[in-house]
Image 1 (cartoon, rainbow, N blue to C red):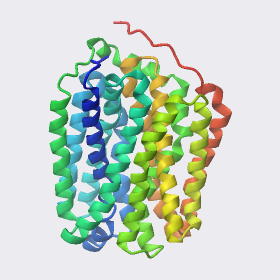
Image 2 (image 1 turned 180 degrees about the vertical axis):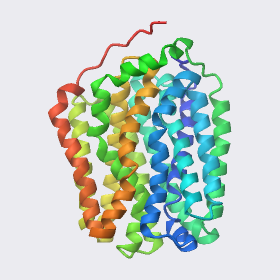
Image 3 (image 1 turned 120 degrees about the vertical axis):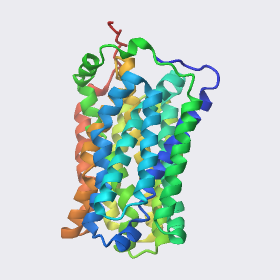
Image 4 (image 1 turned 90 degrees about the horizontal axis):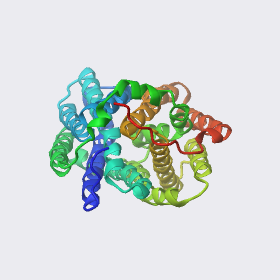
Length: 402
């Protein structure tokens, strides 16, 4: 395992979380620009769904690549490579002239994001004390929501002033700056050479662990809600609820930024509560039910409350998922791979949720889309109550045979 800093680990963790925030900003800053992109490039609703889906195709298909690469070259270099690709792709997205170019650069933005996620969580597992890990995972996911909220509300105003292209140039440049900062701030990190041996055999051992397959399916409501609400709710609020752009972006921002507080608080609570599996399953079920409720709520202040609760539950469900995965990975050198596989399973399903959501909305209406989204997450979460025994217990750490 890599070096654990007893002094100054908060600085390294802060550097990772700052990158996580700007990483999220570059996920969601395209959301308030979709209306402008649609008008500028003459794109239809389904084509907008294709653009958002492109990102998640890259994100999902390269999750396991990121985990394996981190096991070979280390978490630090892999995570920095990921946000470098993301930053460059966002700059190029702002230069796109047609649907094909938008699709391509959003695809590569997703690939870069995939290379950052699990190695960054692996870095946190190496850096912070074990008894503080769930709290820092909550902050990690909360930072995602904080950055995403800034991307929606901030880029809503920037797009109105400068158009949709220059704000993307700026966001990509900030990501590239933080890639260089991470390379410097984490320079003392040295992965254990023993963690680089027998990678594929050990990856196979991880894939033969049933819980690694069960957890991402049970928590599917988190990624479905995060994907669709984060990418398409602003557009939904503007076109279906006929809200002004500022009001629609405010709702999207509330969903994301309130989630930051929920992540920090939820991470702490999950670290000390005794009935953790029940808390995990209950939060996921409630998240799925409230996602369906979006179809029936149109009053603005009720939407504000609903978005706040959805934001808290989304971050909490994903933070609990990642904490459980880390705790139940026997081989500590394969933590990044385990996390990447869990994210792969979730995102390979979530990747197509914007396209499916917009297709259902096109033919059956947005109400049917929200109900379908929540019902799918609810079915997966409910199945978890029948598998509680599979999720209990922590495996012993596996020794590495060189």
